[in-house]
Image (cartoon, rainbow, N blue to C red):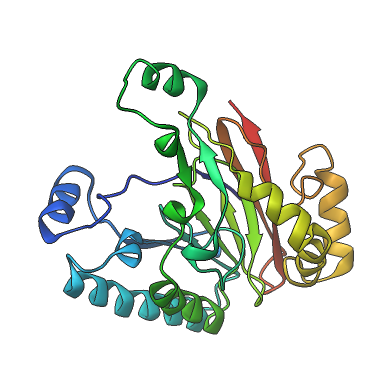
Length: 264
């Protein structure tokens, strides 16, 4: 089974019942779940986890629904559980605070050329700080605790406008895929690579992503040209989609997945 991941449409930086109603009228439910070949997939409106202040009742209702769906997937022995959302749950580390993120994504060159014509524009607004893309820890932890409790295998998201693969301490892979429009490049990714070390990230992958060492090596050899393992910590940073290959061994609970990036 193959799944193609792209970032989802969001409903504003501070969703309200009105903005959510407009979304529902245009696109349908903003959170939902479905089965695909033994894999249970959950789609969330996690912009509410960034700022639920404008729609607290909807946030609490979705949180209750999320745990119900995760429990349902566990009771029905889902072979994989994937979560899809617009915002990353974190960037580099599940315990990070937005205030501790010191990297930034400079504006694209074409944006800078437009800004240079405006005398009121200063260099201080010519980049997006990594903290803009992160999520408040007090809301993030509510989701991650559920993901840990019910063994979510992977989370797919966008919003960061660049490719990045991170890992939680409990083994969930988070895959951020760049959009099909403007792609950024954060200075924080280089710092993460150098200071936190990709070897540890790779070891966690070997332990959690695949049921056995043999399965991991087999997938690596089959997709050696994909770059998903060799790139170690980030997707190829250009326009494209992430393809997820879900491997299910018959009716057994034994399964695994591999992901690779397809430039467009």
